Image 1 (cartoon, helix red, strand yellow):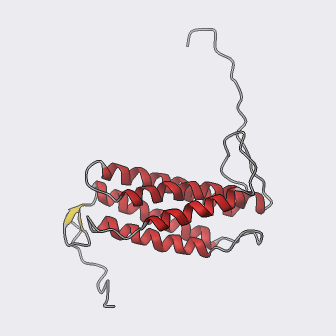
Image 2 (tube, rainbow, N blue to C red):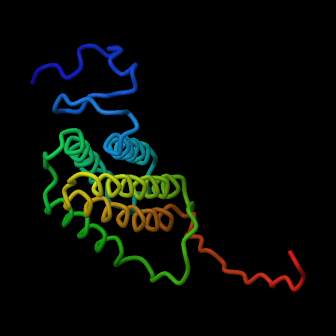
Length: 191
């Protein structure tokens, strides 16, 4: 494989545009670039999650590395309009992992508060970034074609990250904190 980046400072983006993989130049604030940036940020969050210590009770972090590779594929799809890399099998692997992790967890009665352990908190952060990446990809999909498989992939990945955060919180000894709904009395006076 040849060099991908031989020069980092190119100055070609000084005018507010950036290049796609097909050579097209578009605005740095375009919906496609927003989607690519959110997927990139999600990949970074997963790298941070992988770098944290994990409880020995849970499976290895190797699957997260595979997911990072798949997110790079998704970034490639977004960088070259009309190009597809992610396959339905990637979505199915996420679904299988969700089922595997979820079987050991109790049913939820309330919303979960992010936290529980450093790894669980980092996983919740990755989950919220994943949701944003999904929203950005849907924004793009309303303007230009985006692979439906990629959209499903991001939806399943955020589900996986939620279930994984729950498992990490429980296995890490920090416990899983749930939201306590408190009714506030209604004000009887004028506001």
